[in-house]
Length: 98
Image (cartoon, rainbow, N blue to C red; front, side, top):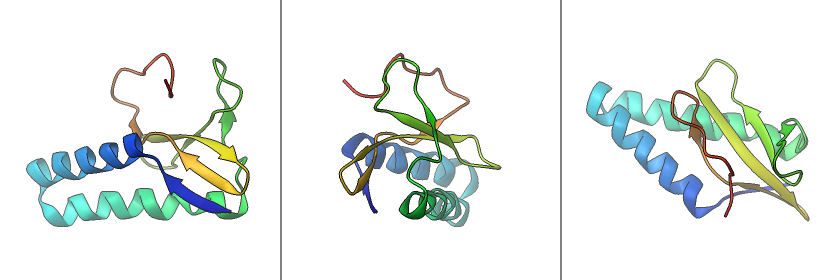
């Protein structure tokens, strides 16, 4: 299973890096990104590890253990397409994809 980070997910990663870089420094910022990328590797062998989204049954949500992040994603053919990297401390959007 291939993991694909869609544009909004990549933007979320950039914003996460910038936030941690500003408040905690570049090393902590890099560590946060590495945690997220490393955790997403679970999708390679377990693409349906997440919980199905109530509003869109093609979207799954997986909360990364020991973090405040949730990865909403879709499984399309042989790809896990990560839609967002969502910080659960923020206001949740009504839908993950437009």
